[in-house]
Structure formats: C-alpha cells, structure tokens
View 1 (cartoon, one colour):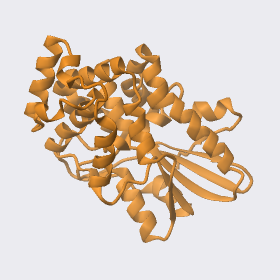
View 2 (cartoon, one colour):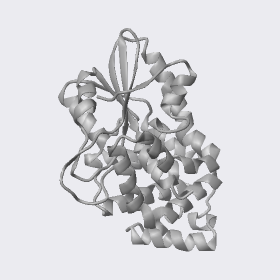
View 3 (tube, helix red, strand yellow):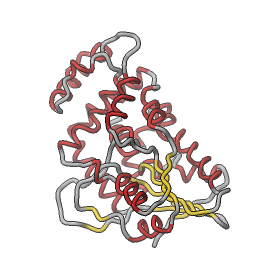
View 4 (spheres, one colour):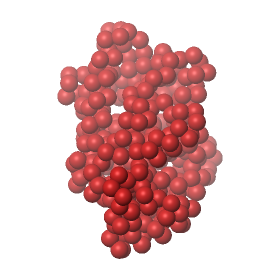
Length: 297
C-alpha cells in the first residue's frame, strides 16, 4: 500500500497535486504521452497531467502544444476556484466527523504516534484536526511535504493549460465539480480512510525519491511503467480503486463517447494515473466500442 499516496497525488486535483522533478536542473525537453479519439468530424485528445512542478520541465511543446493549439475546448477534471478558500471551505464542511470520535482515537497506538509526528514535522498541528475524518489529514500530508520540497501548484499542467486556454479564448469545461471530487474521499468507508492515512504517513520518507522517479517516467512518455509505479498497489484494495480510479475512468469514457456526437476538437487533460494501466480511460473506452490511439508526433 506504500504507493497509494503517490497514486492519489497524481490523479486528483482535490489534492492540488502534483508534478515536478526530484532536483533543480536546467530546462529539459519532455515528451509526455498523448492519445486521441476521433470520428469523421470530432477529435478528442487525451493528455495525462501532473498537478505541481518545479521549474525546468519543458513539456508544453511539440505534439502536446500542437494538439492543444488545434483544439477549440479544454476539459479538465475540475475547474479550480480562483479563491483557494472556496476549496478549503468545501473540504472543511465535508471533513468534520459526524460521530464525535477524535481522529487519533481511530488509530492504533503505533500508527497514532507516527501520524502525530508526521503532522508536526510538516507544520500541521495534529490537535487542530482531531474533529476531522482521516481522509482530510491524509490529503494534507500528501501535499505539505511536496510544498516543502519546492514543488509549485502554479507550475502544474492544469494551471498552464487553463491559462493558455483563457489567453486564446478557448472554452474551458470540467468533468467533475469540486464537491464531487472531494466527495470521493469523504465518502470512503472509515476503515479505508484510516488505511489511506496510514499509507500516506508510511510513504513520507520515500516521497521525494518516488515522486522524482514518477515524474521522470511521465516526462519520457512511458505510461506502462507509470501504471506499474502508480496503480498496482490498489489491486489489494479493489473498492478504493473503484471509487478513486476505475469508476471515474468509466464515467469519463462515457462522456468522451457522448462528446463524439458533437463536431469539433477537444483537449481533455486529467491526472496521468487515469490514462495508464488496467482500467484506464482507454480501457474503458475500448469496452464501450471506442478506439483510442497514441499520438507519436
């Protein structure tokens, strides 16, 4: 379960996550993977994103930039509110425990000690979060260390794409709402919330190394390797995988199939984990009779 935090960081803008490089470096050219779905009068590009980055990754170029420039519309997972407090308010509203049980009391003694130490180490006073459900602290611990390592949400792919779309007068739409996306976590059974939190805490010591490796794989456009790194750990928790990954992929595949009925060119950008491995959006499209092909140039 050690890689669950990496998966969640990579696939959910609700975590306000993820991307970057393991070390500061000179600008390097990246070639992340890109797919397309098309019929006689519609083309839909599928691009896997990372949601925060450090400077020095030149990914918005080549085939990705050409596909974006050719598109009339950008579709993201969510449209992030301009006011960060809007997301914070939604998270706070959905995260309050309804049963009055303190978060620390949901953990074993050993897990409790590791959790409280991790929160304190990342500038998050654990006492403040005692009345919240475990998924909230899990999400915060998935973000705070990356911020300390120098990763920036403002450099993430979604921010870049949305700014470019707005500058060029392209329509911007979303597959989900903020409430829906946060609700995926808030709706997890309590045992899975605890499992998510414990896995996040356990993965913190290796976060920078693992995240740097994930990013290099994304830059090289290696979705099969990316899937192995990000998704395989969820096989042991099929319900968690269904809620956070494959169920959403199936919904998005249905949206893509329906969108083919409208002429035009659309650039769909979702977390890279959704476009990699078993149960990916491409797999879900194939299951409903829609072919997708890799764009190579």
